[in-house]
Image (tube, rainbow, N blue to C red):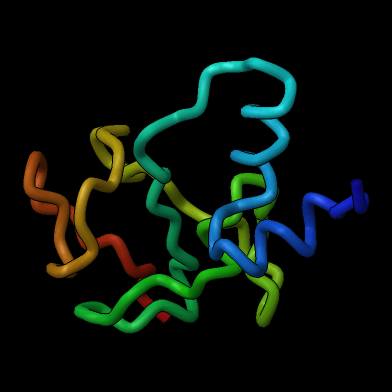
Length: 97
């Protein structure tokens, strides 16, 4: 039986490598991926960069700014990036330059 690396298999299946590792180890797999944005690079109304969504990503790969997964004002998780403001407190997700 051939050996397949989890990195190659995750690319082929288009599934995060962390999910495959969790399944192989018998650990629970989180059903929802946490949204994260770069408060400097993200353009409101656009999709988040795939590299930001990786569970291991903590900083933006372009500018080095710490990624945000929660509103800085009310600390609620970012549920949708379709809009530029937090639905709980009205604070803008993107930092003013």
